Length: 370
Image 1 (cartoon, rainbow, N blue to C red):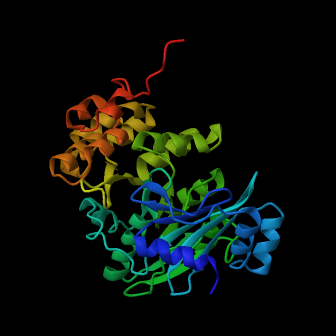
Image 2 (cartoon, rainbow, N blue to C red):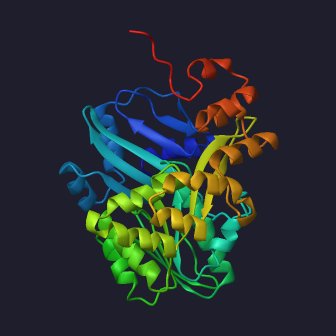
């Protein structure tokens, strides 16, 4: 057993989502969004290096020593699966192990809005799941793929970095490919997938112009493309896609979004009232004629009003979703306040006045007079 497994087992026993290892501090556990040290000595450079090298292959060791960060999946001593990032910093090595549950979650277990089930029924087009790092995008996508797998006879090709949830084929055939191990890049993976008779293509991250362009081509040619972006709202997502491609393709990109983008799902994780868990809260854009017109006429700033009035179509603004979840006693109002856009609407629910005093009414940190 690798010595690092002892920390991973402890983290799992405590119900953490991530285990952090860094020089100069004891191992840390991510518990319901907060980092907490375990009772252990501060890790030295040499000690942590030996822990990390025990779980790396020869080729991974060579890449790490050459200065390359590593992303890979690791199966611990008792079969638990982790997504791992190993990196170098000024004081030595560092690593983060994120636990990947063995059972793929269902949409019902995640308590997602019912409209997400409808998105799984699309035959072509693009559905984007967005949010900051660590907000559960991969989990939501895994649940959507699981739903398709259980209800349709399709060919699903998943491109991941690295593979997280492992999907056994059920009604559908699922082919999971990993960057580095099976394909050189997401763009290469999409290009290859289009020659493999796919019905659904999952792109782990639309991280560059080439990947976005290939994913758009796949969505326009009769495939359902599911992908993620590190954006924090529907408008920012649309702007990111448009700005990512060369200026001469701007009009073509807007035309694609107007016709082939089906939905944008933005999510955050908010603590539950008892502080023992977190709940995903969603902003949802469902593309329709009004939103398509706003995209093509460079008026994306007006989209929030469409989300606010489009409830009958399954749309919702993040702030309204947060307020609804507070009213249903599903989330902690203090944590919701920190994630809200218009914080004035949330001040009356806050019980910890210290977090309000640190912000002005527009949600910005107070700045001392100079």
